[in-house]
Amino acid sequence: MLYYLLYSLHDQFSVLNVVRYITFRTAYAGLTALFIALFLGPWVIRRLRQFQVGQQIRQDGPQAHQSKAGTPTMGGLLIIFSILVPTLLWGDLKNIYIWIALGALMLFGLVGFLDDYLKIIRKQSLGLRAKQKILLQLLISAAIVAILIVLSQYGLYSTRLSVPFFKDFTPELTGVIFGVATFLPMIIFTLLVLIATSNAVNLSDGLDGLATGLILIAASALSVLTYVTGHAQFAEYLDLIKNPYAAELTIFCGAMVGATLGFLWHNAYPAQIFMGDVGSMSLGGAIGTVAVLIKQELLLFSIGGIFVIEVLSVIFQVASFKLTGKRLLRMAPIHHHFELLGWKEPKVVIRFWIMGVVVALFSLSTLKLR
Image (cartoon, rainbow, N blue to C red; front, side, top):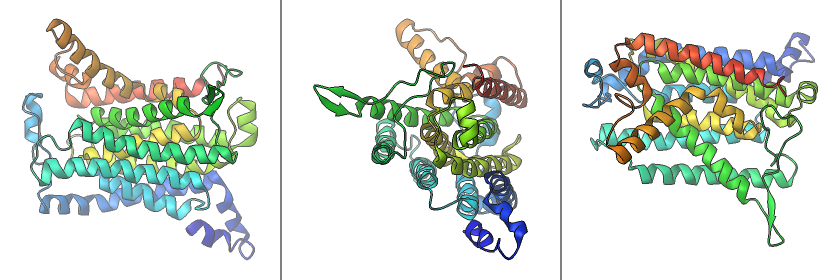
């Protein structure tokens, strides 16, 4: 909205011509999100305390976490608002990709909100059952896939897959079965990506600032990828699947960076507020959707390498216990394992952040290693 207002005045004020540049609007979307999260944070914390929306701590977890019981949660509502407003202000709202990303953010956030609501307000300790959660995520993901299939028919979305390290290998995710064209491979693959990323961030949200910082890193990397994917010259130079509509997603990713950075101010150890499932699921769904839109689904698993490790630690822990009766780790997800080894919480978080930066930089370097 602000984009249209300011750019409409560029004939009268030539300086406003800068508003048309993606880089300018991304920077201001990020700053707007940062200031919203910073300044609204204390008010949100007070309101959550007033409504007694406090975090419940698992009894079998590290005992040091018991002191966190009652800390305001559902701070993801602040993050969502801090992303939504700047994107609407600085983004080109005629771009369908913006609306798909915002829709994913809001809808996955709604699932997280229901989960938090049942656990905290209704005092149902388990919240949504796993099957209910997956079903809702599946429905949202299916809606996104349906939109993408329609867009692909108009040349607005590619059904090819970008494979890291291979510039000439971009397999088609559609096919022909019994002489009939099918989108089945694309549908299955995209559903897995969206559901996996949403839940991976959720599993990683167990220490003060951990998931927030990792999302900040992933969103920063995706900001670079969305920009170069939508830039004709950069995309051609890097042999990417070029899509001019993807450039506007840089605004969305910039807002995500600013929002998580502002939220981290309040969420850093010792946390004054937790993002809750409403935050982790919305952000996970958002980064998954962006990766799908810019055709970097496989690279996302590298960018979010720490999230992948967190998920695998849970899978292997459960599998090992069921098959052998023994646990591989002292506790899963793996960040709790390091706590029980004697690492202080801030050390675990910062070291995971460092590893997150390393894998994100490596992922970006693969754009040239092709």
